[in-house]
Length: 217
Image (cartoon, rainbow, N blue to C red):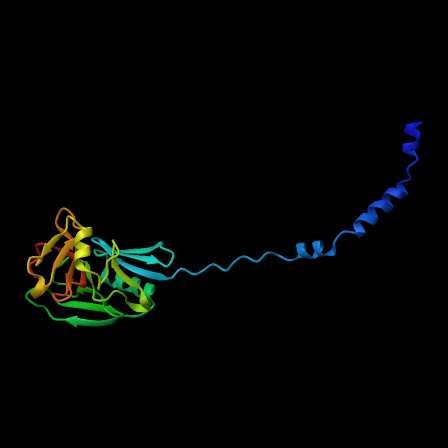
């Protein structure tokens, strides 16, 4: 008897019940599924830092990533092009005649004091390389110029010495005349980075690389 009563349910009633429930569903649910979710626009990575080290310059992005490393032993013309692209500003160039300490040179300068210098006399026999120099904490577009430890022009030279216990210093006994010169980040041949300080303030005034502790000029 129970089985027969169940079988008497009309299929029409089931259809009407389902239709009734469907009619009660909130309309907003259907519209929400039609709206695609928006992805956040990624922030573009820009050049933030020129990091001066023993073997070359590392160019860092605004997100802290390494964008490029330019070695001092690479072609100077290619190096100038790479730095120009990263800074977004063409350098001013200047040539210098040979002296007792150097062959004829060309210097490219960007912004407030970052420069790259290389030998322009192909007959000199000098190795194909370049040097860099910073006279300011920033260059084009407020890009920072600093050492691998984060020191820049304007920082206390004694803080730099304290962070580099293996550094070689000159003039530390009497800095009032010429300031203090610090060679740091040195390899086994005493090649590395050099920083000079102002004799009055003892703040870093120049960062230069590559340099050798035993250089004559």
